[in-house]
Length: 243
Image (cartoon, rainbow, N blue to C red):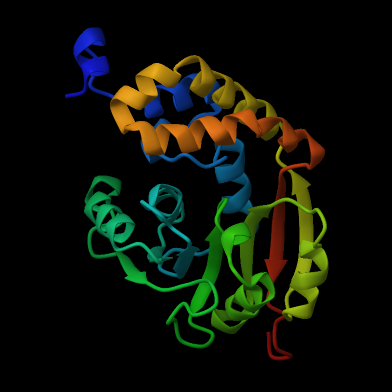
């Protein structure tokens, strides 16, 4: 137990409490995520993927697995999560049972441009706040196109700036079906950054100086968010003539 928890009597980590405060009613707390994931985003992804029970969903850059596990439960699908971090993969696997997905969720190490998944093996894919960190975004999108079954969809979040996601999606062989603004996401992040700055001392006590300093640095640069809009891209691998 940290000093902060001892003082407050609350064993929920401060980082989670601040995240929940900033996101308010838009926060799907069960996911324990630090992404821009909101109830609206989860519903949008479910509607866009159009998955059927028993199909396979891939969560790329899955981290601790929250969004992918929730989506697989909501759509009665199987789940494969891909991430580079062994610690994140272990955590995601440990959470599968609490989502009712024991035996239906599998997590394995891979990268955006080398997922280790077979050709045309997944019925839908998602990546929330992860794909922008790919070292080669075009290679990552090309890999997604490879692993999707013909006609299957990939939904991801990102921001368009100097490099256009729209152009890369098309170059990778995918079709852009929709491009939506994630309304309210910027405001929620700005509220969170303000809370981080206000609770810097407590964060240092809980997380240590290095991790807290990184959060403070990110928060101080947070005003740059307003320069771009948070977007949700709905893409699809073109179906074959038989489809």
